[in-house]
Length: 189
Image (cartoon, rainbow, N blue to C red; front, side, top):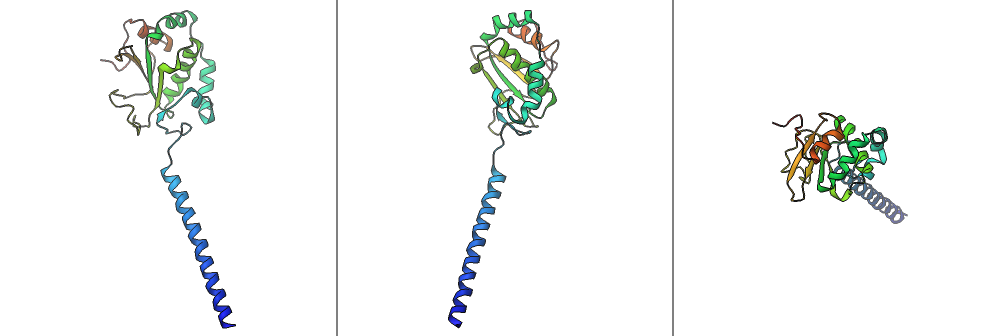
């Protein structure tokens, strides 16, 4: 009887320790996953590349879609942009947390969709509140304010940039840039 009792106590102890070990391992694994997981485009402080599909889905669509659908640029200006914009690649730095980005980026996408701009020529990068990304996408671009929309010619040279808010309207500012008209953003020297 003593042997059976001792055996049962030992068995229960081992089983109990094994269950705790599994629980402990799962907790550690869960904590590790939570603490090291990368953010996604749906997070408010996301930094990294982001697509039009990201904006049109999840919680981003709550602020993206109303601005995208309501934007009605002047048709005459859109036609002029359409004749000239294919000469440029566009690199955008924006913040999903930033009110200026939330105002201008839906308009930009709406405009580019209206002219059927080649999305392969567009790169949109979300930055964190310090205007950086873990990948360093912003290096060499002197990003101080967002959104910053950079127009790059076929030789890879920056031609001009739209920064934070328009001087006239978004489409008029873009037209001035892509037709090489005089244009300075609010922060240009």
